[in-house]
Amino acid sequence: MYKVLNKSSGNVLGIEISGKIDIEQENTLISIADEILKEHEKIRLFVVVEEGVTASFKAAVTDLEWVVTHLKSIDRLAIISNNKFLSQLVDIDAKFAKHLGIGEKHFKVEDIDDAWKWIEERE
Image 1 (cartoon, rainbow, N blue to C red):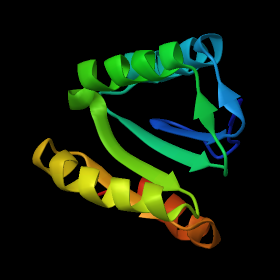
Image 2: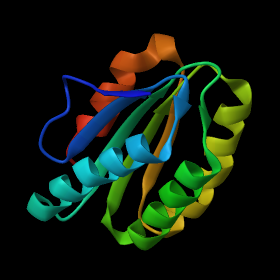
Image 3: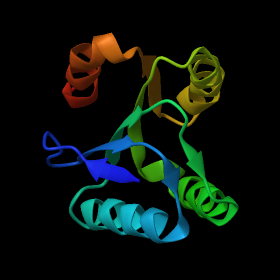
């Protein structure tokens, strides 16, 4: 399941993900992101990932399709978790994202305030 975070505003979409994400939830999240992109050229995604998160295959594929088709619309991506494997994946992906003009960083849960500062800062 997911929860939209109260600090979401403007082009920043903050969400907290826990449990299992199914296709209905994924479609709802995509709709929210698409609404933001109607008003803003680029979106900044702030994603808190709880331990043990899973997604249905259909939700995962749909998420990947949206990301690939919206790469030029993503400005920044902050992933917040204490999962070491996820941290390593983000570090690797950030190198590729940089070539596409996307800022991507991983933050530990205890550094969530720093993550908010980074996602909200204007260049």
